[in-house]
Amino acid sequence: MKHSLFIAVLMISQVGVSFSKESGTQSVSGLMDQVNRYCSEEGSSHSAQCLRAYFAYRCTVNFIAKDPLYLDDCISATSDLTELLDLTQMQNDSEVTGDLQLRQVAFSRILVQSFLVPSATFKKKMVQLEQSFNHSYEFNRPHSLWMQVLNDSNWNREVALEKMVTWFQDFSEPFYLWLVSSEGTHSKNQWKRKTLHANAEALYAFHSVLVENRIKQNLNPSYQLFPDVKGAKYLSPLAHHFYTPAYLALKLKQRGYSKEVAFHAAFLFNSSYEFIKLDKKMGTQRWPMQDPLPFNPVKYSLQVQKIYSGYLGALYGVGMSDKALNFHYFSKRLAADPSGFVNSVHHSGF
Image: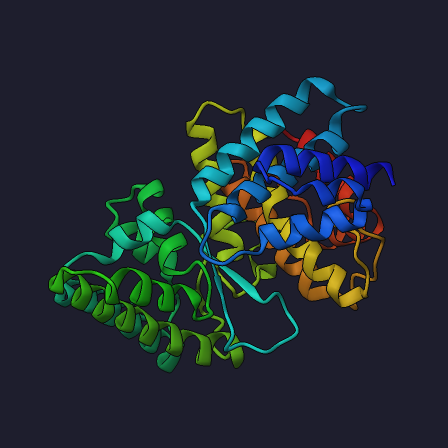
């Protein structure tokens, strides 16, 4: 009850929701329902405001008693992380999976910038990526997508990671649809409209080949999506689970945060999203107001794999990949005490 009241008050104060006089007589659950509706409005900035408030709550719960000096760093870093994410929230009515109904397009501004290049140049690059995959797939030749993108970025890791988090932020459709409908169709600039549409189609074509042959069938183990990091064979083939935390951790470190803080903020972001998924699969409604319950790591192996991918990505972003825990040890610790393990793991090895 105290946790529920605290999260309601915190979120209301941070997102600036103005409730009517009638709200004052509602129960805490009633207030939370209103806050959840506010946070679920499509196309608004509410998603970022609410995400920032959720993180502030988790930082407070996690560290106010155990490490109060770390609390300010945690809140500050997760606030900056939310800014870096640059979210745009949209409804995804075409996907009826019982999953979250809302989808977020991340890195909205740099996503548009990355697509606003001549379509012939962009399509040529996508064709090259597809050819590299096909050659690896057909002739069983080792090839690394990451090394190809890094090479094309003049070996600048930040530039390469930025490409990965925009081009491969998700293997579902929302950001393509958003890019074309929100930025392309409504644009008065004909070149911009045509360029965004053509480049979105070119990237989607490469995604389709990659998803069909790599993710669904997984028949090409010699084709590597990721850097050669410790534990890489346990990474989720859904690339955004690794690259998004990697990019965010790198950017937070560049903003002056310690490796420990930058890693933790990025890892908390990735694991929080998967805790929501875990709640749905387990039939519970605990996160973020309560810690997730212990779970069976075999039964929920998909969530473990995705959380481990975010863990390795965040470590890679701060240059600490060599400190990665063994997957099986990580899995057991995470399943036994999900939130406690996420809170504690960054204190070791830095």
